[in-house]
Every structure is written in structure tokens, then in C-alpha cells.
Image 1 (cartoon, rainbow, N blue to C red):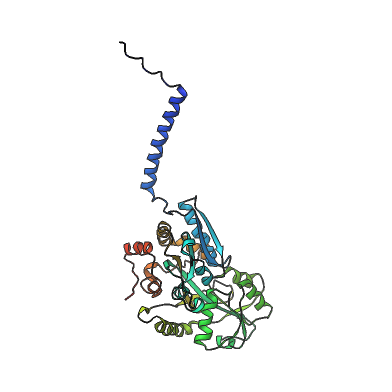
Image 2: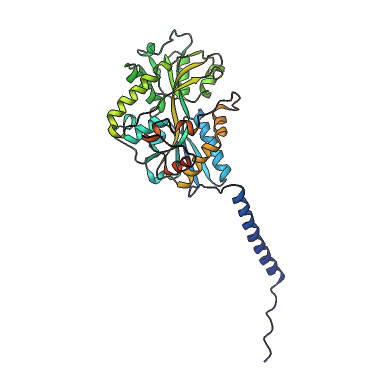
Length: 367
């Protein structure tokens, strides 16, 4: 019996489609290999949408959030990042309260506020947020105490019996202002919770005597008020209160936490430079460390990416705060801040960030 005839060749268009499909697979595989060799793959895990909680809109740390958005998009253009303006630190941290809703959420926070939230004290009294973890340092919230240049006020104690704007409820400005006035100076000025724009406008109109603001310097709203709105200001020096504020922290938290307490740098010396606000001059003041905070339920790959990006792309974030950064200022590095500050012990580093810093021989000094 003669063997059956071979099957007819498939039509040319089917042969061509098969060749194209095969070539596409090979090229894609080669390209994927090349990408893997040239740069690490995007490591954003399950997160198709990431929320970044920052504080008031168009302030330095809101701009920092926009820089983080750009960095995430550079790694994975398909990830949608929402930079959300908020009242500030306490508001940001409260949004991390639900682990189920915090998988893809990041908060910029004063780290002393994160300690309050972690242990349920001050603004979070009896309502601790479980599972808060730090990712790494950002920079300092620099304490500005602003009065009118024609007010005759040249010392913070003169504000004890006057009216001041202290930032919005659930903000870091409000919290650190309470430490300065209530705990250290033992006085209670009349306070008016307001956003920074309204506080500066009220100061301009003589409705209040001072504005307390904890944020990056220069802050665009303050710069605009000085250069465009005709507000002549004086910044009160606060450096002499650095040690009393630190002592107040140690006394309060040692009593609250017992054997969980870890001592170490909390507040830091900070300078508002003469070039920050034209005509104001250099002012020595107090800085409060800022950092990125997540819920421990946050996606592991997202956290690992951010921890590395903060370290490797520091100039991008410096430019976000300082524009072109022509003055050559720099953030303190993770190697400078993490071993020195007890804040990374009281609210521990999230495991993926700790693993990365450990690989660089950077460790929190928790005794």
C-alpha cells in the first residue's frame, strides 16, 4: 500500500503568522533578558494604584510626594500614583489605620508623630494604630515661628498671651507647637487652627500675632507672602529650646513606655538659611525628623523599591524641596540618621527596608 500523501502546506498567510509569532517570542525573551541585565525589574508587586499622603497642597513635602510619583512611574509607567493633600502628620497616619486599605499606601510623617500613633498618645490618645513601620528618612520639618516685622515681638515668650495660628487639626505643626508652648514654656496662647495660607493672610491683616509652621524651608506659601503679598516678617530663633524639648520628650516617654523606651536624638538643630526668604536673615531653630511610614501590611515589593529609591536617588528629592538646589544643600543620609535616632527603634523599620539597610551596614541603634 502506498504511503499516504503528505498533508498540504498551510496557506502562506498561516505560515507567515506562525513565523512572526515565533520571532516575536524570541525577540521578547531576548529583550526581557537585556532589560534584566541592564536594570532591575520594576518591583511594585500587586500595586496598580499607590496613594501618597503628604500634607497641605503645594508645600515642600507635597512636592516631595510628586517626586516620589515620578520615580515610581519611571520604574513602572503602568502604576497609577495619587498624591493626596491632607491636614498633615496625624491625618496621614490615621489613613494607614486599616491594614486592608494600606497595602499600597505611603505616608510622609513627622517621626515623633508616628511614635504617638504607634503607642496611642497625644493626638492618638488611647487609639493606637497597629502595625506602623518606618521605611526611611525624608528630611526635617523645620519649625518656623513667624511674626510681623513691625510687631515689636522678638522672643517666643511674648506670644504666650497672644493669638497664634498653629496649623490645621491633625497636623504636625499643631503637635510640635503644643510641645513648645504647653510643655516647655508652660503657657497656652490662644490658638486658631488654620491652613498656612489663611494663617499668613490673618497675620498680614493683624488678626493674629504669630504663625507656627513646621515644614520644609523654603515653604512656597511663606515665600510668596514675603515677595508678592507685601508681608514683612520676622522669624523668631528657637534653637535654645532644642534641649528642653528633648528633655521633655525623654521624661514623658520614659514614663509612658517603661522598658520599651529607647533614648536618643529626636529633635535636631536646624537652620532657616538667609536665601530661603529674601531679607529675613539666617535663623537657628528646631528640626523634627520626617520619614516615610507604612502599615506593615504594605506590599513588600513596593516597600523594597521605595527604600532603595530614597537612598539611590536622593538628588531627585532634594530638588523637589529646593528647586534647582543651587545652594548645594543635602539631606542627611540614612547612614547618618538611622543609627542616631531612637525614632527608628520606637517605630521599627519595616522588614524589607531593614533588610536593604542591613545590606549597607546601616542599623538602628536600639541598645
